[in-house]
Length: 146
Image (cartoon, rainbow, N blue to C red; front, side):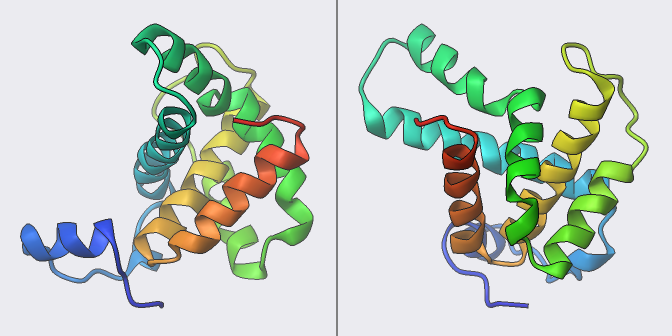
């Protein structure tokens, strides 16, 4: 596991969090944090691209964080994932969620959960650059741009 640097490292230090074995986390726990960090990455890029009214920022962000888009991204990335990344994704995809998708097809929702689990795993293991590279590449592969 890589040494954590950046925001997560600061969070652990300031809040005095003990080290945990991330590989023991449930896939839904990884998806929970992955959903948040992916949203933060997208919001950060959208804000950096232009200073706009909140409503417009929100509309731009939604297109990237919805399950359908995440599903497309992870499918586009499938050939470039490492074996470990593929395993984490599959664990997340196959997890039994406690909620039902409201605005997404079941397959898209499951793939999006796997994508979020992978993002959470990469974030929690300090692999921020890999996480960002996959997000950027996935967005490019599906023909979107922020």
